[in-house]
Length: 448
Ligand SMILES: Cc1cc2nc3c(=O)[nH]c(=O)nc-3n(C[C@H](O)[C@H](O)[C@H](O)COP(=O)(O)OP(=O)(O)OC[C@H]3O[C@@H](n4cnc5c(N)ncnc54)[C@H](O)[C@@H]3O)c2cc1C
Image 1: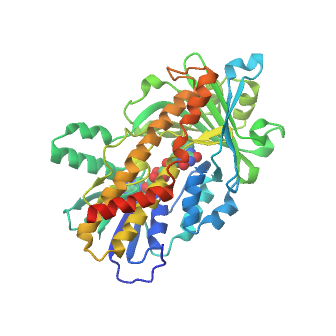
Image 2: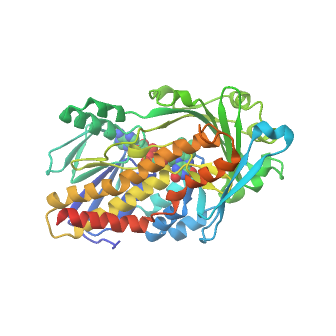
Image 3: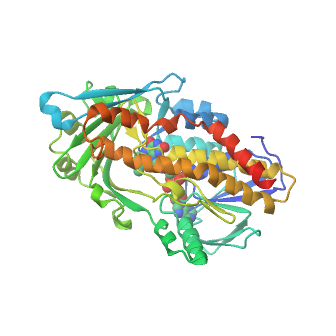
């Protein structure tokens, strides 16, 4: 994308939310000529939680295409050279007495891991001055089709823009307003089920451990691990891997009650601190290696893992949803060597990459934006919605497979391994480059 010196923007884009998705979109758009971008963030600064994050090679390619490769290489735990082999190990805690049952599925997909705070810092450093507006909590928006969007914030201030992008996370108030309005306009009350996230039935405990607290031979330091197991009442698995140049071990444990999937979202139980004993009790029957790991997490956080029902659309008029706001998902579709993490941030970056490419094209067209902008948003939805919804659903299904709760495969390794491998086919095909070209073609077709 071209560097911009333009002072009279053709297109004004407002972004609500400065997480991974909002920041990446802002950085990408700030490099396009003719586009003015503003980020409205409710908090008084950009912030991330202290934990690990993993991205696939396809996301890495997007970051590089924006010139961010060198900055991310400095903080990446496994700098990508295109040759990284990823695989998957099962380890069944219920067979610990008999020795470990073990199976490897090889997958040739490269990926990279980071400390989350450092990951966000790269975007923050790449953001031009005067783009971010802190302490601006969006309360509502209004739009007259073809005449832009008006924004209202909690402090009484207002703003206007040509296009408004909701990057305000899985609890998105913009998604709420959008689906309520379309539901009312169309008389389709079924759409209201997309307003709130729902519980996946899974609880996660998360913690970071300085490596010096673990014995040097502990497997979680040496290699990324996923321990799988089944207890009497809960399905469980435990993921660990080192980040920050190997100085810290990131641990996420999962305990599921799939019969509770779809229960309504409860604000008060979403994320909280919990006593270490609660975590230890939950995994008390696990093998000593896991118990030893968990006993070093002094201040675990407890997460009720929510996701969205796959949305039927992302756009209404000049308002679009992006990132967790439109596909908040369970964190089970990222994988590196033997560990699994999420794919939500990677999908958010893909959304932003496609939308930024389309908006750049809008700014280059000689036609009035009132006619081209709706076509660009339609093309964004056509390309991104089916793909992201596929990852969302696959992410939930993969979690069940790791906990041997898939009706077809159960804990039969012979069939489960290949079935899990199939879950990852989206990682290689189609590439973001191909998706971008498809989006631009779709846009051209729509405006002609
Ligand atoms: C346990 C776990 C592990 C994960 N691991 C990975 C991983 O390894 N790899 C991966 O790709 N993904 C992973 N994910 C998913 C990933 O964290 C999310 O997909 C990603 O952070 C979403 O980014 P976002 O910018 O869309 O939303 P958020 O990060 O939630 O950002 C939303 C922003 O909007 C702001 N905001 C909210 N409401 C308003 C308002 N009304 N006005 C103004 N601002 C507002 C918030 O303050 C916040 O800054 C994981 C998730 C979990 C739960």
